[in-house]
Image 1 (tube, one colour):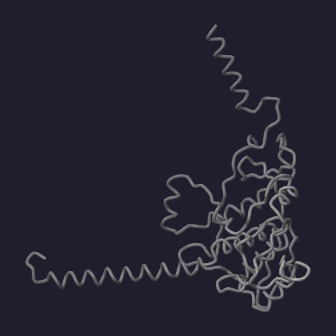
Image 2 (cartoon, rainbow, N blue to C red):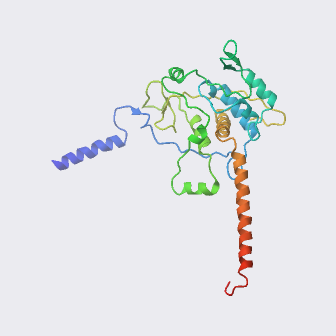
Image 3 (cartoon, rainbow, N blue to C red):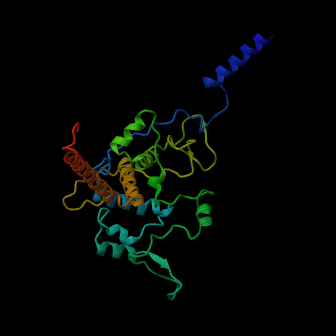
Length: 286
């Protein structure tokens, strides 16, 4: 009897493992997780720097697509003109700010045109408004989103990150997320109402619909610039780079400071060695 029960249990388990059950698959059960590929970012590595043209394109994607749902509470307009960032001109920043209205109770009418010192306006007046407009889910703030996300690597590959100064897990994840929507969902996958299938999102069921499509944002090619493809992949890379800068605008200055410190320590260690040799040169055995 016990043997018969064991055989039946094994048969049921085999059916479950081979997907022969009649019930529809949930999003979590819908196949393997997709491996997130590392992208070749200009700001990667020990000596990488931001590409201001890419940051300008990324800001355009953020402004025209992402900003309708996501806030950037730590961003001020004048940040867009800082060295090492998108480096828009002061005139461009002033013109951009003037196209937005800021709530201000001290002025007649309660609103005024924004100035470069103002913060980027939120898309919703209150958090509850944001939830009501997005089926109960609040779109996250983008100020430090690239530092709040990352990717997992199996041992021992993550050990190499300490030597390569890898810190681009956030933009790698964002790029992968934006390019991993599957519409419609795979056959047999049952999603909750209002959810969309994404191959790398935990659980695969995400509230955000695919935000990007080919040709959605029209890039303007400046003088001397090479045209870039207006595709989902390119949009994703550009906005991911912009969000990395938004999360860490002083990344390049930090790298430069770290390099100077390391150079100083190397020179200092050499001087200390020579001092030691000089002081102990008259002592026998040294």
